Amino acid sequence: MPQPDQTDANAGHLGLHRQLSDFLEWIKPYRELFILAGAVVATISAAVGWVAGHFATRAELSSLDCRITNSLHGQLIAFKSDLADAGVNWRLSQIKQMTVEDPRPVAATLTRLQQEVDELRKQQTSWVGDMQKKMEELNRGCPNSGISMAKN
Image 1 (spheres, rainbow, N blue to C red):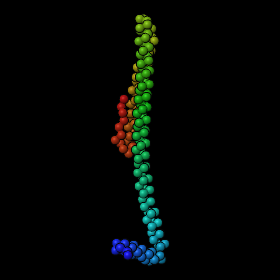
Image 2: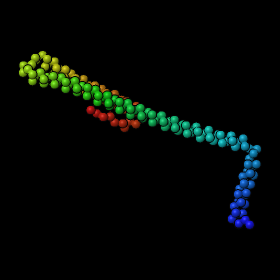
Image 3: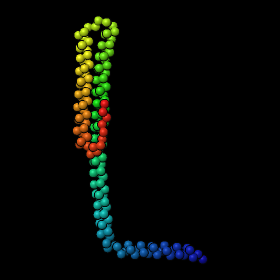
Image 4: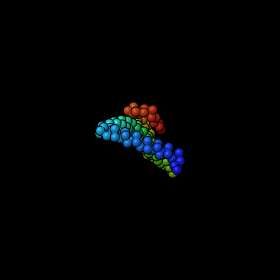
């Protein structure tokens, strides 16, 4: 003998099945219309998603481009400064070596080396200043103008 819980469950299942069958019979003539409406909703949703993703990505790429450019220019400034410092240090060590080896160094050579040191320092200062101005100009075009640059 079936138990009352099983009978109620089977009746509920059959009732749901019958309701679903009746609904499917009722929408049969409108099936293409429902499919078309679903396709339109899906297309609009996809278009909205694409537009939001496209423009968000474009802004992020622009910001990334500015950060990379600033980073590269900052590294270039540091590299050029280190290169100029190496040239200055090399010339200063030549001057020091010449004065240690020979107490009577050739004045013309010492003067030339000192002038080279002074010229390298001027070039370094000028070049770093020009690069910092260029970086400031690039920062003005960035969407996130709060990007800071390292000053050497």
